[in-house]
Image: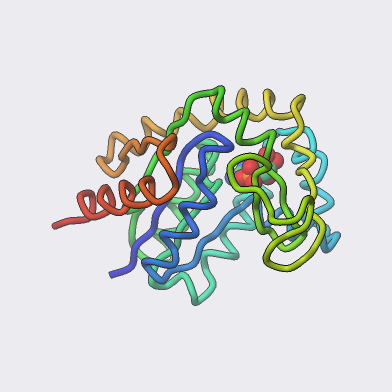
Length: 220
Ligand code: AMP
């Protein structure tokens, strides 16, 4: 049976890491809108150029641009058995558009929404210590340091700090989350598909909690 999953949670809660693990477990694609935008930015596409200003400022890219991008991704054949969305939807308009997309393309609905929660202080700590390589591998200066300073363990490329992981922008992103994305908790709770997950535990424990919640929500 096809399974469509939406990860909710503030920036820095570990959505990306957990979404990737779940995608591997369920053998369905992991779609991160942040990664899609960064990929477009790296390749200097029209979409990337449009998104850059908003991303650097820690603001949301306009709904119409974001929705179009997800629509074309979700309608690709590899999503026919399901997909894991990470970083989308982030507004009510996006959530409604996503419902519409799933209905039109696959005659189905969102099956499961893990909502990862972490204290604000820990979030700031996680975001400000985060480093990435140009291929998207993620490290943390304290919690997951690279073997060699500033070099990716996996591909040997130089690590950098995302522009929007700098202190001034982090505050803005957390504010945007509270105002625009947190209301989606209610949206999915009403349908009984949302479960809260404690994101302060270690990575493996969080994965286990998500899998247990997934089984619980999708059991017939
Ligand atoms: P992320 O890697 O998920 O933190 O996303 C990085 C940035 O990409 C965000 O701060 C936004 O500027 C943009 N972005 C990612 N996903 C969305 C979305 N669903 N709606 C609007 N902007 C987004």
